[in-house]
Image (cartoon, rainbow, N blue to C red; front, side):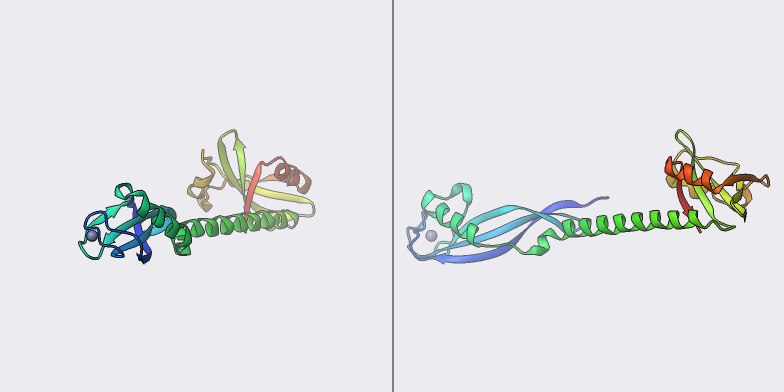
Length: 200
Ligand SMILES: [Zn+2]
């Protein structure tokens, strides 16, 4: 269940000396208040939606929303709105999203650097994730490296989603058969985008 909604946060209130209450005609009795709404998901504020103003008479307690106020009061409310800043924490969700994006971009660039480094010095036990065919992925396991040749055990299974490779990446799935690649072959496969990731 996703809980999504909005909340209003009180920012500021000011008593107006000149305004007159439209209900009881008392001058100087109106308190103008500004709120800022924000959208939230699971009570984590995402971003502000906008400010709203209300007025309340301290004398007759009559409260007015913006759409009920005479222009003389709404103009004061609008001025107060412009002067009032909302808290930064109402952007918390946007901040978290940006942070996750940066972490993701960093992790992805790290993984790409690792793949290049592992390809440059292959080792027995390395697992290569590769594109087996259009829309199909598999892995092979490096058995041994002899000079410029890399001998691998192919995985006997393939899967249609790269994120599900872990399901077939099991020791018992590797064929006892051995296939040899030159390092140049592997480099070419990586350049072509067929080798996606190397795990060590
Ligand atoms: Zn009043």
